[in-house]
Image (cartoon, rainbow, N blue to C red; front, top):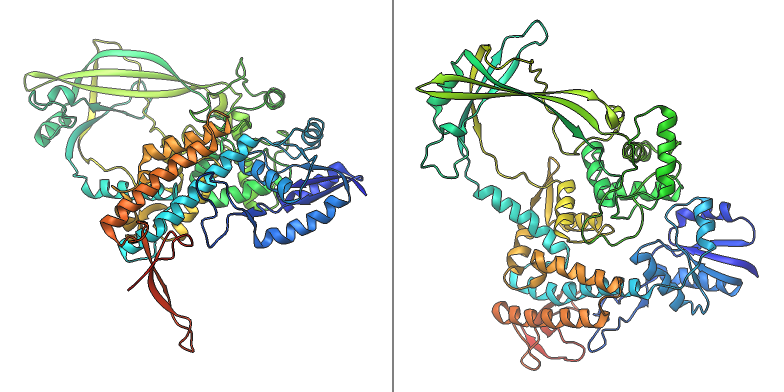
Length: 604
């Protein structure tokens, strides 16, 4: 008998973990989920809503192989990933393999210290986490199986509804409607360019403050619509210096990466898709280079902070006096730390160019988080000149970097920046001038601008919006984007997401009929799943309530848009199969969605 068997999820981790544990251990992989709900039936029903699981095609072989290993093991440790999915996989392994004394262990980095620490403190499986994952899977099954058929009937096209994917498609559709309905406003301004002062600057700019010139009747109006007024302001040359304010601004480094912010930054900086980012991060994790990549905590462990600070200090970089921490977003569910290198002193990791690029992004972000703020000197001049019996005001604002702080890393390849979508501020070297003195403009320009609608979503900004609205969780963002793209509900044009006619059909078909297409409902359901995970809510109560509401909505939808079963009142679905080459085996009829309990059919 082998002394101990450790079962983890990914086969990519097996070799490294086996090397760490050495002789006396056997390391094997479940290769993800080994069981799931049946494909051709709901697999869960009232009143207890207990899921009926069957081995997946791959899972059959995996379970057979693992069963042989279990027989030859004195102890079995379940080291699947440290999140809800991993907890559920561990339970499925325990249940399917009939393990009586399996030990659950978790770690967030594949290092000897982390794995040894986990093995020294095993626990039992957290059934609240398992119930939360089970609840997510069952709710997804309800929406997909109960709604997709009636929706396809009503629209005349084969469509699939999803508890989270459909609200994501709706975000893209709603944004497109907003863009098409947007009415642009042309507005005007003025900008003056001034002479240099004592050869200190090359010329600096001041902008016309239009607010005092807006008509009194234009309550709420933000823009100057009088072009002639802007042109007149652009002709001013001699201005009085009314005020000169000196201030300081500080820029703190961004927090270490969560799953969401990593996907956003990699999209912006490296042009990786969320799916690609997660695949690369998975490989870096399996190689032992970074910590676990599914997390919504922006904070690091005390040990990691200590190591980062020691490294920065040795480099002579400006450390912030008190170690930084960040507030987790509302609804953060995972207890893992942020994504970081396992060994901060290793400058390069990964086997491919893309893996190395992502590692650099993660490492520099981790280093920056413990450095001082970047400090800027800000100078603001207020200038005035007489125009048409009133005083025209102009403002010139410029800033100069006084102390680099964390910006010492910003110019490095894949270095951190203040905002992944932010634009660089233009340089405007405003001189120090005393109030009461004169400033002479060399040139003036009337500016014409048009208001723009909100931009279409990129994959990165859609993830940010999903996170902001509480739709989905760290482990699901990449899958959501991949699903709505692969099913052709959205398409990509120059990195921007555009809804397809199919996507628009789904949203128009669901809106007004189903609660799960509403953003607030989806957010609240995610919270209910979090409550199950934390032991604050009971699985059956949450699922039964959701099932009752969805059943009612499906029947109302069927009455409004399609056929209902005369026997049981459930929606009928159009079932079609073309005959084979021999002309046999085809069918075309309406069948009750209550099958097999209700076998009512109707001719087409």
